[in-house]
Each structure stands twice: as C-alpha cells, then as structure tokens.
Image (cartoon, rainbow over all chains, first blue to last red; front, side, top):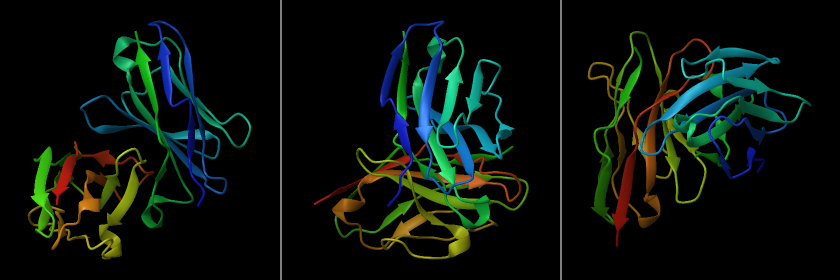
Length: 115
Length: 110
C-alpha cells in the first residue's frame, strides 16, 4: 500500500537556523497538509495546499513558515528562523480528494528539536 | 470555535472488558467527526468516521448531536487494541483542517 514518506525522521537545529522538512505524498493525491504536535499536546493543523497554492493556514503558520511543491512529487515545509517553541513532531498528510469522502494519510513524522 | 475534548489521558482495561473512549466536541455548524489511531511506532491512521456508520476492528462510534459527543466503543477489548486514540473534527466546508483532541492512551492488559 502506498505511504506518505517524510525525511528526516529527526532533525536537530540551532535557534535561528533555517530548516526544511520534506515529504513525499502518495502519488495520485491532490491535497497536502502539514500538522504538528508539540510534546504532550494535541496535533495541530498548520496548512493545507492544493493546486500549487495554500488553501488554508492556521494562526501558527506565520511568516516564518512556508510550503512548496517544487517538483511535483515533494512537498516541503520551511521554517526560516527556528525558535525553541518550534520543537515538535511535524506530520505531513495527503488525501486524494475533498475531505468528505477521503481520509487523510499521514506520514511517520519528523521530530524537530531546536536547541 | 471548534474544540474537541478527550477527558481521559489513559484508559486501562483487561482483555475482554468493554471499552469506551470519550469524545466531546464544540462546533457551531454540522461537523464531520473522526477517530484516528496511532499504534506503537506507527503512523496516525483513520479508524472510523461518523458518516460511514461502519464498524472497524470491532469499534463503533455514534454521533450524538444533542450531547455533542462521539464516543468510541468496543464490547470486548483485545491486547492489540492498545494504542493512542485521537478524536478529530472537521467542518463540512473547506479543506481538511482537522481539529484534534489531546488523545487517550488505551492500554489493554492480558
């Protein structure tokens, strides 16, 4: 069964550095998402992406964050200048079509540690 | 505002016992409700959703709009049910901006 893959599984970076988290969604999926989970807290929506543009974003997704689908297969999340509070598990997800009839497929996540 | 509440962080039962994982929600419109499960060292995956009205791995969940609840139930728990369970909500418009609860860890002991 096809899966969403995320790399790396664990990323350690220093405060103020830029990081790029990478995801390869399932190939025939059209909708892409990033969620994050700070340790001990709930999974939170960050952003949704469709037709090469952001369709919705949360308050968390400020100017330090950006997403890109550079080559038709990868879907990346960039944090321009990381803060300590960006430390979390970041989940990529994709779905083949609009929510109502299709579940989200999640990746295994990237654990980001900002020191 | 959209909110999902799972009051129990941990639910510990013996194999064969009934299980009920509680979920309450707050949403002004007509929501879509889901249960996602995360087994040890595995990814989040959809367990069931209220529109399907199906039973998956013996689990069922009924949407009670009067009580704004979507509790997950199974009559006889199995050890392999041990996992983290997340209740999630989405509005019926827009993309999959799922609002998750904090999750309940179910531990089924032999």
